[in-house]
Amino acid sequence: MKKFILQRFFLALLTLLGITIIVFSLMHLAPGDPVTTIAGRETDPKIVAAIREEWGFDQPVVIQYFTWLSKALRGDFGMSFINRMNVVELIGTRLPYTLKLNLVASVIGLAIAFPVGIIAAVKKYSLFDYISTFLALLSQSMPSFWLSLMMISFFTARLGLLPSSGSETWKHYIMPATVLGTTWAAGLTRMIRSSMMEVLTEDYVRTARAKGLKESVVVYRHALRNAMVPIATSLAYWIAYLVTGSVIVEVIFALPGIGRLMISSLNNRDYFVVQAVILLTSSAVLVANLAVDVLYVVIDPRIRYD
Image 1 (spheres, rainbow, N blue to C red):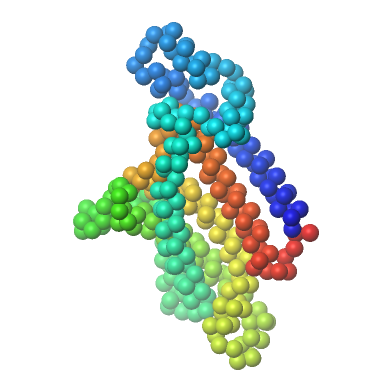
Image 2 (spheres, rainbow, N blue to C red):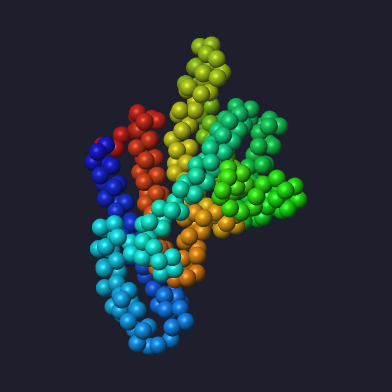
């Protein structure tokens, strides 16, 4: 097990290295020059050249990459061109908003997906099953930006119940968290239903029922645990969705989180911020996948990584 974790950790580091190379290359291949953003209205060639030299943009791209990577390994991700702040400090001011949004969205998604998916599997082909499956497909088919705009139109413009932007109170998180949570719940519900339906036909489930055990014990103690392996895989995928999907939601609802920071940094060619944010989000996804691999052993002791 330890050997497997070390191997996966090493592969994760190699993956992160590959991500940094790709992101760094794409940022420098994109049209536009960050020096013009830093210089502002200054057009004096000497001053522009001095700015380029100060920030290291006069060096070859390969040298720039290794300079940035060596500093990043020491925890120095540079300065933001736009905000004139240390990148780590800047991300630290925005990260709590994204974490709060994703936490609330996760609670909403899990609170919907598990009970609905389990009941739909137990009562398969019933009216509840058909309605829940239809709603799950409908929710998955709706783009998050469209659902966000519809919620703003109804709950803000028409009813005036919820604010459409900002992050001052808990009300500001209701609509964006609901958009993320319901979209996540839709796919997870279908996965739980499918996995549970397969497990409920197994011999050990029929044996448990034949022993006279309560249906709740059969479903939750015997069936659900054995159905959790594919569900755990789905959870890792949807954690990645929360990381990426929050970008659109944060922009629409004007939440000052990591996603909105990345979009504004992309628009302004704020290289160091974009690279640090992508490295952070990629690390979160890789850690989630590694955690799920370890969780497999906890869920099913028969799984071994020897």
